[in-house]
Length: 387
Length: 139
Ligand SMILES: [Zn+2]
Image 1 (spheres, rainbow over the protein chains, first blue to last red):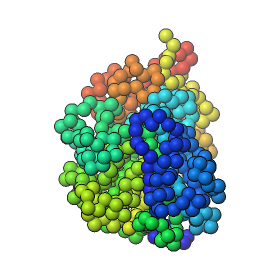
Image 2 (cartoon, helix red, strand yellow; image 1 turned 135 degrees about the vertical axis):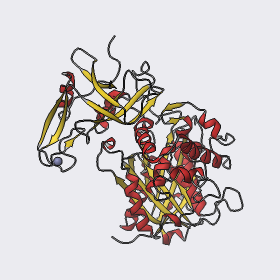
Image 3 (spheres, helix red, strand yellow; image 1 turned 60 degrees about the vertical axis):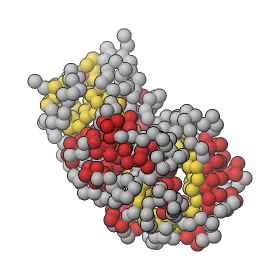
């Protein structure tokens, strides 16, 4: 395997408007995000020759997007997928550029996630779910149809084994909501959360109340990946990819078979090795946050705090500005917006590039950042970026 | 009234389990090659890949302990609106501690459910010919 460390970069990021009811199609949203990312990179649409997207059958195709940017693509790919798909497609893009298939790839996620197809559960065909999920007949007839329940089973056991409390979940939420107060585009901008309010909110599905759930939004995000050589021709400051672990899995597709392992445990070793960094070298992070607990479990997996000490780590304010690892600094999916993780990628690129320099949103001296993806306990990915 | 909740779909891999449930018995797939239990059942052993599989009948007196659980206060699937709050648990079998089954805990106050709690399997006849295993607190 050739070493790709720092030979590829994210050179453009962009997003559409974010709302609860876009009143438009995913294609329109995707075009807005793509044009923003292309403008950010200082490229023209014709410089992009590969287009990729992920969706849950709720988006437009890459070929459609390219068509209405006026580009005939050399390569398109649309995959079914949610969390950790961004990391996977970035790695795929690198492979395609490495083998000379394309030069520059635009990856997008577009969804009417609130007004259209919602991810939080409900509305799915139950027979489809039973067949689509490994061992589905052993879980769906018992009313477990939401990721909050599937991941909640992990959370309850993990909290029991490691001493994490509801208040520790709350520290994740309060920290991220606090970040959102510096981001006028965040959904919960102007709506900070206190611990008292958090603890007084009833559970929707234990151990989670509504604040532990990510929100749902209509929006599109786009990023552009190219080689380090081409990155020099862009007007933006490149965010170099030091390491990427595209996808790792746990040992059984019916992931409830073993609550002791999550895919992030396997991702961490690979991504640190490729990047040649250690957890203590990180300055900023975007940690996939579909639920608050998912952040805590990843802090353990990625060695950011030792197992059993993750609760203290977040209670000490280490995810906040000025903490040991400011994370999800735009508010994350808990309070900014939700595109199955790509909005978190946009934010870490902007932090690494020091886009917020001179404002209180900029993490001081941040050179190296971790971005994680979580499809579930079963499948995950991550990348480490530097400026 | 007709049963409104999802009924377990039988397929070639899980049929002995659900046929057993319909008779109010618990059957667990086992691997003849590595002698480990395989749950959920599949076309091959997930531990070693062997297709030398068989089924062990645990009968109708099934005990276990709660390994993890959630309590849901809203229905995430159709048909569960009258079952709230709903306790969904992973239960470790007393006679095969490597086997953990997902099920609902019935006849239990949601404030009382906790990890390590002993439970006993019970079967609810949901249609003329189908039954669904559940759990109740063990005396
Ligand atoms: Zn075996």
